[in-house]
Image 1 (cartoon, rainbow, N blue to C red):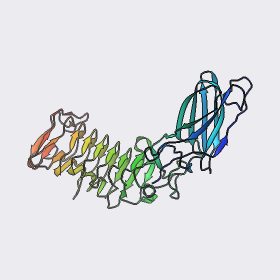
Image 2 (cartoon, helix red, strand yellow):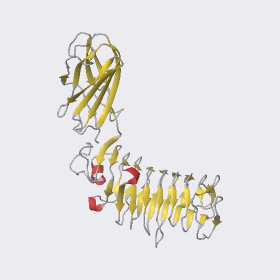
Image 3 (spheres, rainbow, N blue to C red):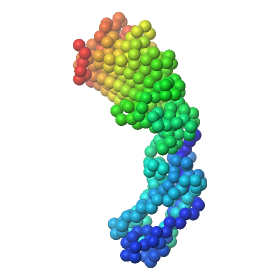
Image 4 (spheres, rainbow, N blue to C red):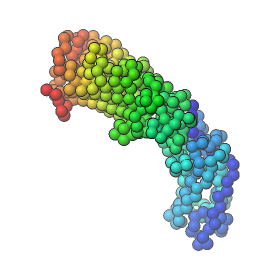
Amino acid sequence: MKKILMMPALAIFLLTAGCGSGDSGLSGNTPGTTAVTINFGNTDAAANAGAVSATSTIPSAVVSIRITVSADDMVTVEEVVPVAGESSVSVTLDILNGPDRHIVLEAMTSSGVVLYRGETWLDLNGKSLTITIDLAATSSCRLYVDVNAGADDSDCSNPDTPCKTITYALTQTDGNEEICIDAGTYDSAAGETFPIALKQGASLNCRGDNHTTIITNSSTTDTIVGAPSASVEGCKISVTNVVSAIDDNGAVITVNDCFIDGGSDINGIYLSAGSTVSNSTITKFKVGEVGGTGIIVSSGSPSITGNTITGNSYGISILSGGTPTINNNVLSCNTIVDLLNNTTGSTINARSNRWDNSTPSEVSGTCNLGEDICNSNFGSVDYTGSTQAASPCP
């Protein structure tokens, strides 16, 4: 598992000559200064993964540290110390005496991306001291993927040298890490292998603006397969001729802020656990011979909240073993039925949704084309708080 940690004790002494006026900030052994030695760490890496540890080494992604010292009564001073190739670092510097000296440490890549940051405030009176500043990750990203600029020949931990495929990045983690994916199209032509099987706790964070990180699959498989506590966020997933766009695989996963579209004979999201689907658009899953549903709930009690589910043949289909909570969604313009309830004797919580009708049309038994709700096995739906969608279908 690739945890980016860093920094204790090889001595690098930073002594910057003063300007003679007493207000330069970092002034090499001049009167009116305090020698401050900074050690990096004393953070328990196991308890605070991603922070700077006093017993770990500098990761390859970090090539320099930037030290900034400021206060109301002194000129702000900034120094950059190279650390590439070092196993550990300690810095000693002379700082102008006075109250509220603000010291900021930043660990950077070769292109100046700040991976870690820490800070402290000191009152200095000329008495030398040694302090520890813990550096915390500025981003939760642990692995980086860029189909346009990456190569699958590293551990993916350096944002300046990202990997090319999501498939490869997942081989570089044991799970419980965030994989940040830049804009571009990720498909079999780019080297992706489907299904993309998530690992426990792994998070796919698609960072392209307006869903411009696109995962495209036309193989006869699932596209993304879940694992316990895994998540998918910000992605556009465009599929044809597949089993489903996302299958939680019986594990509790999170899907948030995704745009998922498809073609005939396929399904969008398949849920069989207490997963969460939120703030996403699921559209264009059309019926052919075997499929055409935006979200299928086969079992479990998933939460489906804040989504727009429109333009499918079936919006949401609940099989006999499912007990989802379906709140605050747009369920409109799905051509056969917006919500198909196949449960028997249970009441589905589908409150505060927006339908084609302010009071959704509802039938039991045989479903009619274009209904809002169909209870095919004579279960029931609680649609309290329903309103009409902004662009309802007739």
